[in-house]
Length: 416
Image (cartoon, rainbow, N blue to C red; front, side, top):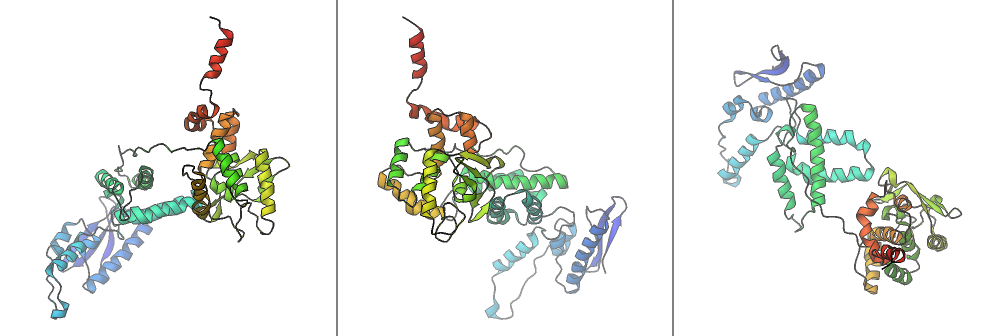
């Protein structure tokens, strides 16, 4: 019967057992703690059981051991019992090589876990910090992208070359004939980076992510509507959706915030509404960021629209302002495909996402000369920096001044 012993020179545990009449010692990097001894004893029991049943594979447990080559250097010849059971020699060899070359995943005798094992631990530890929607997105990246690629690799074995090769594969065309955006690729690699960085810190190795920079991401395309276009949209929209679009165009709220808006958050007497939640993936969730929780000042068109919406939904028992017949917020995808895009097509207005209503609010406010700090608060931004870096280029087109105000000042003060 094999046993777990301690090597005095390194103060590390090792396996001590006999296989095919040969005494085998396999050193680990684990210290002789009770937990580690218990863990390795469980593995030793499995090894002994497989030896007794003649199913033991030395390479499966000790892939880097010289004895693995000694015991499993020859691929066994399989003779079929009948012609019906014939299997090609190529298939036999391929399966044998697959078994011999398999990386150790479940059994980590040197203390370094597989990517699958560590990513599960990392996700369990980190998810308490994330919103429910973020948990879903990270899990989606792990399941669809990272696990299929790195499942059987141990974290310290994933090199810079592996990461660059994977990045190149992500940039190619997938099975659906589509190509991932640079932002999506960066998002996938960012999760991989976080996992390997944490693993490197815990298991003392150098991560392969050194000197690998994110891909360049094009600037977000901002295509706000003009005030004339807004007027046409609101005049043509059905009575059912006109209040929703009015609030969207003149508050700068995100779609998730509009759908998660409840009547209890609205104070028409004070002409304000408070945003504390959002409707994300068919469930109520927290806002995108902590700064997104804010109070918005309501303009007279918005107050009128909310008053109409209250009348429109009198027959629906719901806490949500923009509710469907079932009392829950209406489906944003159905709205976009069945209401929004057909409306733009009817008006011969360039096709744009409904989210552009938020950008429209920002550019109209800036163009009318509103205080940038007030606009930033309305939008849920921490500063005015985003306003001037993202929206300011649209202001001249709205005000039609383009420096003429300063020119008029010069004309009035200077002669000749």
